[in-house]
Amino acid sequence: MTNVTTDISAARPLYVKNTIPTVETPTKLTVNMSHQTKTVCTAPKICSHTFQLSTSSQLLTFFTMTSKFSTSTNNTNEDPREPNNCPPLTLSPDLTTERLKSSFNPLAITNFIDGSADATSKRRLLESWIIRDPTGVFSNDDNNYLHRSERHTRALAKFVRLVELCRAAGVGGKKSNNTSSSAVNHLEGEIIATPEFLTLVNAISDDPFPTSLHWVMFVPNILTLCDAEQQAQWLPLCRDWKMIGCYAQTELGHGSNIRALETTATFLKESDGAAPGGEWVVHSPTLTSTKFWPGTLGKTANHAMVIARLIDGSGVDHGIHNFLVPLRSMEDHTLLPGVETGDIGPKIGYNNMDNGFARFENVRIPRRNMAMRFAVVDEEGVYEKVGAKKKGGSGGSGDAASKVACEL
Image (tube, rainbow, N blue to C red; front, side, top):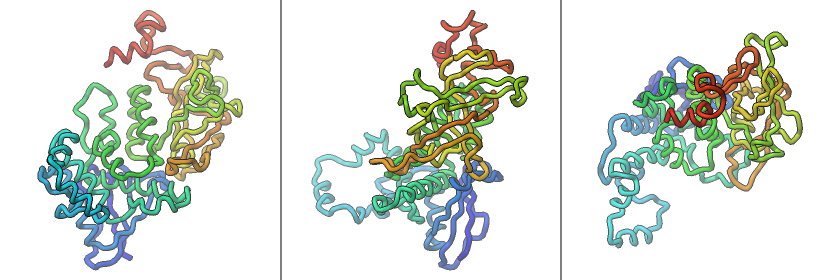
């Protein structure tokens, strides 16, 4: 078996480091999910997967197909999902006959729904990557016959392949023209922020990916609630899939009643034994404070945006705030000390997703792991809302909602 290693780390048309074999032999395709060429992915249980390609000619043909995206879309009636516009083999001939009797042009309606003919062509091209992918990893044929653990593993393999295709075609390769946010400088190569990514996710037509909460909740929380320095530190790790996150709010005893949440984050000063600059001690004081049901938490995530009650250096409870808590090692995905987490088990649906539970036993995290865009705690444990002094005290025009409204 000949190895063909492709590097998807650069957001540009795919290139092959080694020579493509000329013989018709099975090949392996290994994946690096990093945006940067020289960066090595450090979450092997999540990001490493091997796909079998039937022939080297298929490999080369598919590389050519995906590279078309970086040039232009073909605004014609040709459907790249079905070569030569042949109907899918699974489409009933009777349905095809009835469609030909319609009094309107179905393509015109499709273009209207998509927004334009060019948008339809682009969507179809993206969908063709999934339909015609030579690895076969996107097949859903045996989903209902797989053990739930196999569903989870297969879904991760699909996602790795999806990232590879996006890297191959340059999806997310350019910086946003919007310079109003300090985050845009850290989003180059971030595929999850693109409409193309969502189109491809929809084309896969499966239950949500185990990684879904990473882009649905985790990254948006960093963008919304973390300051510029924190974004600069964490967003590149998210983009390169070294930091894979979830949103841990719901608790076993409280559902989404956030005012009743019991998980605590208590500030510990350096003079009291904390690391330099101070630390937070994240703790689950009761059984009912167990984080329960968050997606991506059970097996996939190595970090969580934990919603906990902030206890400052004077012992004052300031209510719920967001804290970035490491769950598993980014080197080997093992659980970190003081963290207990796992999958909550099979469900009626969404069995690709590892909805999970988590408990924290006096887990220490750096002071700056508190989301500090709208409130800060200094090294002495003093809590203050951002802008409170400038606005003449806390509350009123200095609160977080007013600040967001002003920025918008």
